Image 1 (cartoon, rainbow, N blue to C red):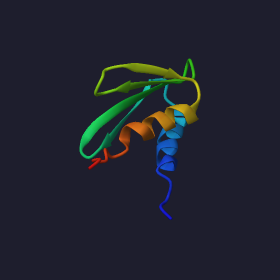
Image 2: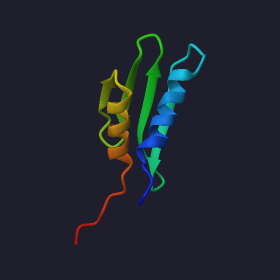
Image 3: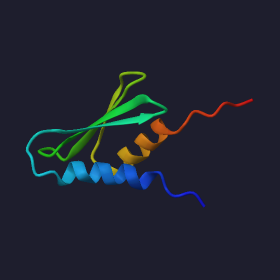
Image 4: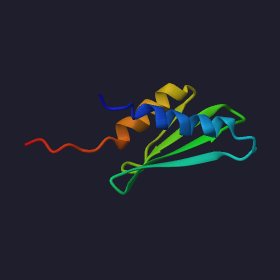
Length: 82
């Protein structure tokens, strides 16, 4: 059985929440050498902002689980359907 890919993502997001600084925390998520998204965490508002690199769209989340699932979907390797 393969280990969960969601756990490392959640750990990185939790580290953003636990940081003691007042600055907005930023993490970049990559797959196959390509940046897929940037996640920012604003401690003052308690919200995450996810920017999809391919489309430039941004999404707001106030739930760590939802942002983690979105990151997971973006970093999944693209499978070739033949």
